[in-house]
Image 1 (tube, rainbow, N blue to C red):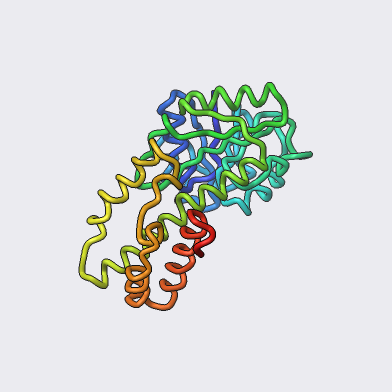
Image 2: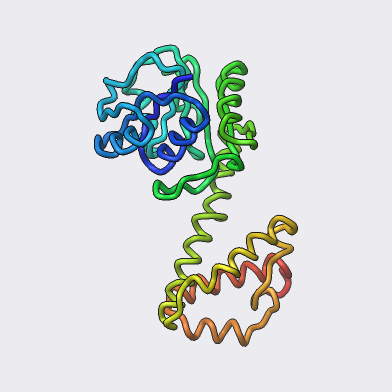
Length: 256
């Protein structure tokens, strides 16, 4: 199987490397910034282009892994060649291909990616959708080359999945950023938090998030909560109050 990678960002970089490792040929990489395409192409032994018109027409599958807002533009700019086209977005519906491609689908790996840190795809869940059963099976087989965990999910399911991922990953990471700010003010390194973070995540393998909730809001320890609030700037005070109140509401609604 030959797969053209359209994109050279965090997702595309990790996916292209994983595809090559799995024995899938990636002969070409596109990016609107040629230097980015060239960097990825060099790493996987492919050719690079920054021109959509120069994308090869003889690949088996075309994987669009660009910013969500650009997916429709890419699809519209390239004529259909009758091959399989997929995108890797969690929030863009499959209908972005409708009327413009004969065979199409979604190939969404739910993970946080960085170019600098290679990802082991074996446990990364892939969420798959396609416009026809035969295409779905092809996309499923491709996902199976990379991961042990593949699921079929509709566009609406993926949208909700993406929202959940924002809460679980992006917002959680921002909380760690705020924690880092507090530690900086105290002259302490962020890595003192790592054992606590690791334990919190490990508990989720045995307990639901609600069951594993701890902390002063869970205990209704108002004195500790107020002392924390008094030490924070206004923006962090608002965030602290909102989150604490929501913990109280969820675990004992009549005490909010």
